Image (cartoon, rainbow, N blue to C red):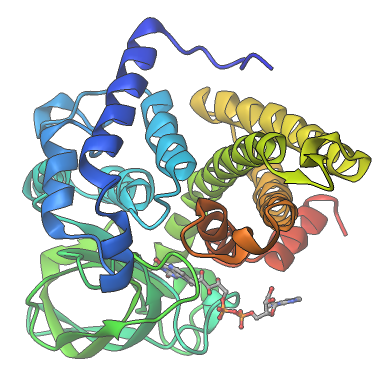
Length: 382
Ligand SMILES: Cc1cc2nc3c(=O)[nH]c(=O)nc-3n(C[C@H](O)[C@H](O)[C@H](O)COP(=O)(O)OP(=O)(O)OC[C@H]3O[C@@H](n4cnc5c(N)ncnc54)[C@H](O)[C@@H]3O)c2cc1C
C-alpha cells in the first residue's frame, strides 16, 4: 500500500542515508550493547555528527529546521531494524521539545546545542514507585531555598536514566491545598547536581540495551534558573506533550510490526514442513492475511495522525486510540509471527524473538492501554 504522507526526494535520500548509518554504526554491535544493558555514549555523538539528533531544531542552535517526517523516518527505521533500545526518538521528539517549548532563550542557548551534537543526552522523569498511571500521586517535591531549588524524592523506570546529562524532572511545588493541576512544576536537573544519584540499570525482559534506571534526589540543589516554564504549570505542560509521545509509540510499533510481518512471510516461504513450504498451509495464509489486514488498518490510521499532527491539529483522543490499538496490534503480530517460526522463534539468534520482547512494553509505557481507553472514554463524554 502506497503511503499517503508527503515524502519528498530529500526525505528518501535521508532515509537511505540513515539506513546505511544503522548498518555501519549499529548492526554489528547491537547484541553486545544488549549484553551490557546500555548503548555507548559515543554512538550518540555519531548520531549528532550525522545530523540525526533533533533535526527539527532551529538553525540558530545548530539544528536543521527539518519537518516532522525526518523524525518519523528516524523512529521508523530504528524500529524496523529492531534497534528499539536506542532511545534517540525519546530525546529528539519527547524531551528536547520540552526545552524548546517551555524553556526561555537563555536556557535554550545553554542546552539546545549540546542536545543536537550528542554532547547532552536527555531524559524525562515523571514516574515514581507509587505514581505511574496516577501521576498526580507523585511525591517528589521542590522547594525554593536561598536562591536555589531543592528537590527531594525518587523516580523510577527512567529511560536514558544512566546516560542522561540533563533530566526534565516533574516535582510538586504546590502545598496540600493547591489544586492538583497547579501543583507540579518541571525542572532541569543536570549531571553532577549535588544530591542527584542514579541506581543501577533496571534489568528488563526486553529493550535490553536501553539504560532504564531509578533516579534519586536527596536535598538535590539546582539553580533557580533551572525551572522550566512557569511554576505550577508542569502538569499542563506534561499533558500538552503527551500527544507527540503517544504518536511516537504508535509510529514505532507500526513500523516494528510491519518488519516482523515481512521477515515472517519470507520465513514461511522458505521453511518446509510435511514436504511443502509453511506458507502453503491454509492456517499460515489465514494468519498472515489477518495480520496484513491489521497492518493496513494501522498504517492508514497512523499516517493520518502524522498528517494531522504536522498540520498542528489537536488529535489527543485519536492519538490515544492509536497508541493502544497499534501497540496492542504490534504485540499480537509479534506473537503470531513468532508462532510461525516455531522453536526457532524462541531462540535469541532469530530477530523475531527480539521484536516479540521489545513489543511487550509498548502497551505499558507512555500511558498503559487501560489509561488510553480511559481518556478515549472521557472524550466520548462517559
Ligand atoms: C521500559 C520502560 C521505560 C519507561 N520510561 C519512562 C520514562 O522515561 N519516564 C517516565 O517518567 N516513565 C517511564 N516509564 C514508566 C511508565 O510510563 C509506567 O510504567 C506506566 O505509566 C505505568 O505505570 P506503573 O508501571 O506504575 O503501573 P501502574 O500504574 O501501577 O498500573 C498497573 C496496572 O493497573 C492498570 N491501571 C492503572 N490505573 C487504572 C485505572 N484507573 N483503571 C484500570 N486500570 C488501571 C494499568 O493499566 C496497569 O495495567 C517507563 C516504563 C518502562 C517499563
